[in-house]
Image (cartoon, rainbow, N blue to C red):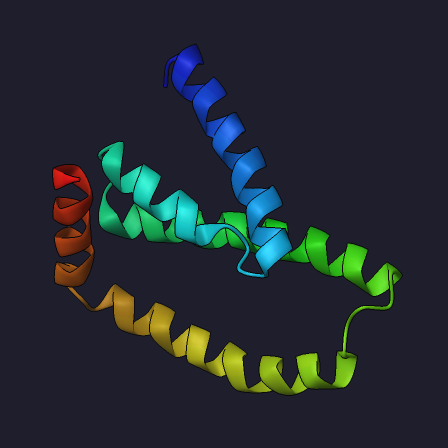
Length: 112
């Protein structure tokens, strides 16, 4: 990775973190497409995006908890339901040879 690419990824991380925390998505909707356009493998882009979302969600959640803007009970209910689904999705992805949907999105983004 060149210094210019590293600087661009730092800027993307800042924008994704800010935007993702404001609207509550963690920033993955910005990170994965940029990584795909930078020719990252689809599975690598998805995994990297998930790591970014984890960091952004943790820091945003901490801030919102301090501001008392979190319904902790609802969050726990969603977590109990969501964590098994996320684990299942990660396991299913290991057994999938390619991600045709991701490749189609990548193609559409490159045409735009």
